[in-house]
Length: 179
Figure 1 (tube, rainbow, N blue to C red):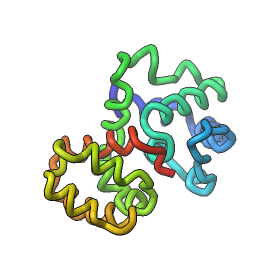
Figure 2: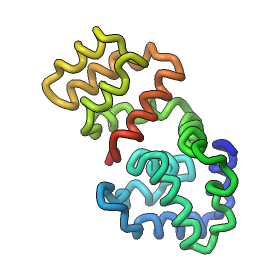
Figure 3: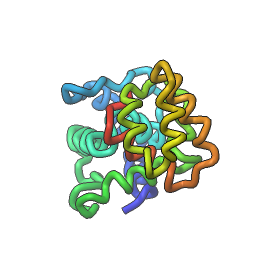
Figure 4: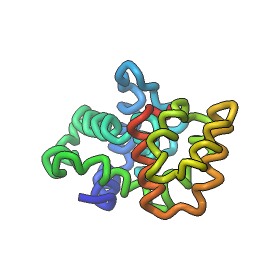
């Protein structure tokens, strides 16, 4: 199952059901280390924007869990696009692919990520050797603040291939709720 199915699922809700989805999503009490989605961001969000928000704030696994919970809460659980239909371990990859519509997630959300990523040192360590050379890692690590480090990291991103951006996305999802 891929991005098209996820978006079709949310689009099948219809206008009223989509609004109920957003209303219920704003009421969800997230797990301890996560923040609420901002109501103002949900207000006019379309299915693609909702997917982006869920994953930006909650990461891949928990974002998928929240979406499934909301669908069940609004009596649309039959539309749930995951657990039983997606092989174990595939969900984060599938949702990551969904984010690539209209450009890669890490490109589309550059400014927000630069400002919000709090675990930059952990991110850099996980990128070292896979996406960053030792020299790049050292250069970025010398930044004085998380924002400065992320700005230095983003100087490299435009030259990256898709698999390198995918890896950054995975690392971000694994290291923190970005919210």
